[in-house]
Image (tube, rainbow, N blue to C red):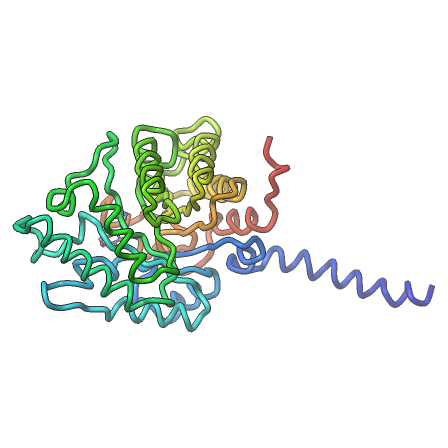
Length: 352
Ligand code: 9MR
């Protein structure tokens, strides 16, 4: 009896602490407990004050938003510039965050010096090999995951006519993965694209691309689904159909690949009123639940820390765009709470 009397307050305290921490736990602690990554895209020029606090408190993974693209890292034929990437990698290391390097080959941010297409196939392959080796070897053991090729397939399921494609041909993709693997055999290598979340012509073509790569023993570890979505897109009967996304993730998983949700944000027209923010929160919850319910999905990465610096503002010419988890003043939005709750509470039993 005496034991029980002593134990009771201790148990009460434990129960209270558990319910409080479930509410207040940073996203990264909840994600760590599930052994998945929760990440954000980041920019080196912003790494101070609230931005740095929120980024390091909430996320266990950092993606380099634009400073590791070729036009930045290899601006002329004879020079490299790693200033921004170095700062991001140092910040991540200081805060025990994993780094996702984004991205080695992309048709945008393609350097002018290489843009003439005036190279033979062999010359282009040599340039690519030297470039990939230089970048990947520099961050060996520090950048754990690379988006090797970004957006190489069109919405119609064709090879996009990128400069690399024109200079080298279809096999530029597999060569890029082989060079990255040579440079760092331990790094995880991803193909990344948008609009391939559900089952459609594009995701079918990507599925074939990565299947062929695996058949040819090309080192590839995963596929990134960007998920630049619009509020109202995700749901059981909506364009980003939960079941279709889950099927898509699982078929990639059946090949032995991981899937990362790499660039998640949810835009909306005009200003976001309370009901838009609520719907946005529900959509964020949907995406997190999709990832948690599909075993191959091992990372959810939002495309920015705060609405203040989202790319959507410029892209949509909408100064009121609020597509992320934290508002302009770094306050958590309903979307944040939804992600937090889903990470804390979701079980596959919740699915109908
Ligand atoms: O958000 C990125 C923005 O800051 C850069 O100016 C831009 C060009 O480098 O790239 C944006 O990120 C893109 C990503 O790399 C690939 N998928 C689409 C993203 C939004 O355009």
